[in-house]
Image (tube, rainbow, N blue to C red; front, side, top):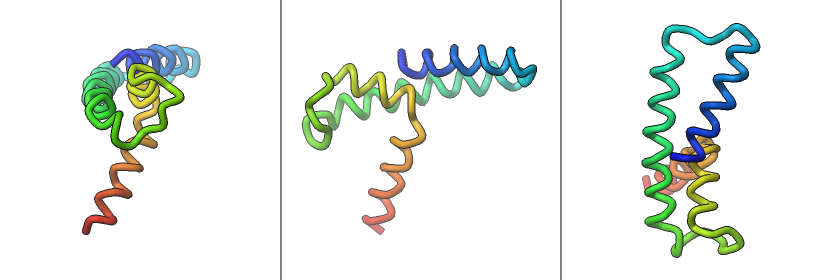
Length: 83
């Protein structure tokens, strides 16, 4: 969740600077933090199975929360292979 919160703070700053912050922005940011928490739990759960060990488990969870798009792309790729 910390990674997602960091991303949201950065995103809010950019939205305010570019005048793109809207009425739906808070909901979108809240959902990002919630999904970031879920992704962090997934990373912690599967850490010993699939991830390189240069970063600690908390480092991987932070990175996954901050950059959720690549995590979801990897999950999509895995599920596509299982079909």
